[in-house]
Image 1 (tube, chains in turn brown, yellow):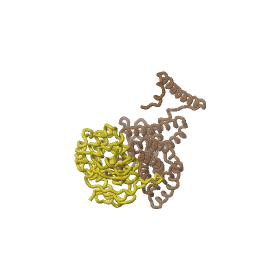
Image 2: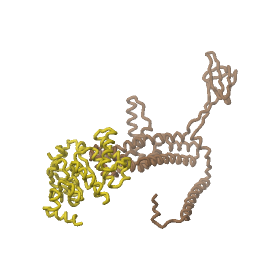
Image 3: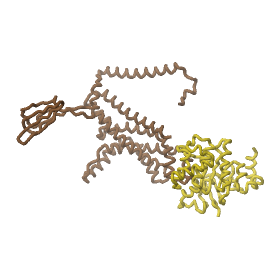
Image 4: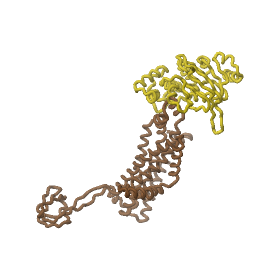
Length: 334
Length: 247
């Protein structure tokens, strides 16, 4: 690794030890200050309330659906079967033995609770994380395809293609993403969904407007990254390829793009990390992604400190994983 | 009929002020001939060479390659280029491919040869330029001289009728110039039609059938090397030769 410090006189062992300690001390101080601040506003940390928003178990009452008499209760270990008899026949209910509320001979009306079973399912935060993952993944796909096409159009000699690309890039880069999301959902979405209703088709889920907004937004940036990557490949490569008789398309696909890819990947990773973070804006159009889910969790748990810290860490996990993946791709692409 | 017929071509670069690179160049080159183009830098010799496979589009005149007018927009330029090999000063090998892949890519994509056919032709040519053992290497692992020999083999793999050389030894360390020139001499002896832009006067004297001297976008003088190097007619040629042969 090249270290700029190598141009100065060599640093001693103590130098590194000292400044590493300074870093560790700074980090410790920051954490301590944060804790002290929370204590001074009498905030009570309740980390134990967080896990339920990742995975939650809920109790579901089992109700009788008909009137009748309990003719039999067959207990077999964990579960029990209640047999309900009435003039029209027999009804059977499976209930956990520990929660049995009735016994043989009881008269039961419709709606009476016979027992309680539990079901576990992902909590709000995990659901939000999945939505963020889904939206980001789709938008990365869309943005890559759109960006690649626009980048190629941007360097085309055909004015219609080139100017279309420039117009698209400039418009998208020149307005805030939040405004674009509103435009796609409240303007385009209203028109489309009204047409859909008129044609008796189900309206499109807000999630797709979110994916559309993010794809189109990141596509403009990806296009510029692709263009810069292609133009960074020495022009002699294109000349050599064409001088052998390859067509422009063949030369681009076989010679230029594979070489450009190596230079495109690092800035592309940065772009997609931004995209994952930008997906937090989609809460405004009723997509319950991680940030919106966190907001809901805060209002129900009343533990904003823990929830927002967890939310930030979850984003960090997503972005860091993507970053590692791209580094792996970079090593693979010679 | 000459395999290359160039009639009154001209080319101006706009950078953005107009710079005339070629003005009214005409020349005929017969099949099997080795023509060496010399001249001071900026004289238009590289531009002239690049016009012959339309890497530069001559704006006036006509260029017939094997009877086909390549300045006609309707001509199939890719088919022409497959018949006209080009070797560049900076090699321009494809760095993301092995030596073998460099040689087989265009054979398969343009000549539609099978993988085995292309590899066989490639290995024969690598043998010929003396680096068959490096077929699995990446270009960056080779010396400049080896890279340029691979580049020559890559062009030859298309079985072209004409080979263009654009200062093929100018980017090489002096001790590697010989190995590249040797390959070119062999080619010339085997009857390949070659147009070579170079500063290697020894090569011109030994191998060329004809030498063209270019200055300021025109061919000032042409003739067989013995006449050209011993009794140049034009004062500009005399001046140029006295400058480079002084060492």
